[in-house]
Image 1 (cartoon, rainbow over the protein chains, first blue to last red):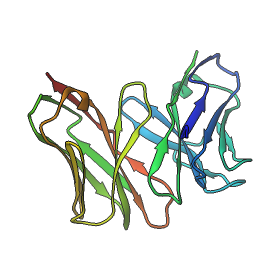
Image 2: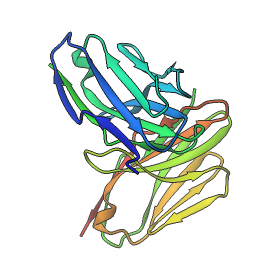
Image 3: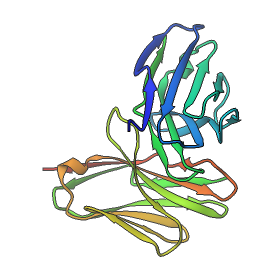
Length: 111
Length: 110
C-alpha cells in the first residue's frame, strides 16, 4: 500500500516550457487535490476533483490545468511555465472530503 | 471567507519542556479541524481530526483539543524527534476544501 505517490520528485524548466505532474493513489479515494506550498504562504489549493471525470478550481488555478481520467490518477499540467510557478507541489487524496493524505511533493524550479 | 491563523510562527523548547501550539479559525459551520506534521522536504503527515467543541485526541506526546474558536496542540515532555512544522487546517460543511494555516515551526533542543 503505497498511499499517494508523485512523479517526478524534482524538475527544472525554462520559462515557456510545459510539463505534467502525475499523482497516483491506491486508497480508492474519490477526492483528489493539488496544492502548492511557498515560504510564508502556506498550502494553497490549485485544483481539486471529487470524482473520476470531474475537476474544479481552487484558490490559485491560473496557469494550471488538470485532468482526472482515472479514479486513481490526477494530473497537473503547466502549459507555459513562468518563474512565479517555482514552488513545491503536493497532491493529496481523501475519502469523501475527510482527512487528506499527502504525497511526498514535487520540487519545481522555473528559470 | 474562511481563515486559519497559527501561533507562534516558531517555537524553541528544551527537551522535556511542555508547551502548546495555537490554531484559531473563522469558518462558517465547522465540519472538521485537522492537524498535520510536516518534516523538511516531505509532505504533510496526518495527525488528528476534531469535529466538535470539547473533543480531544491523543497520540504519544501530542494531544489536540478543540473549542468553538480555536484548537490547541499540546506537546508533553517533547523529544528532539518531535521537531517539525505543525499545520492546522479547517473545513466547513458544503465544501470539500481545507483552509490551511501557515504552520508553527517547532524545534526541540536536546
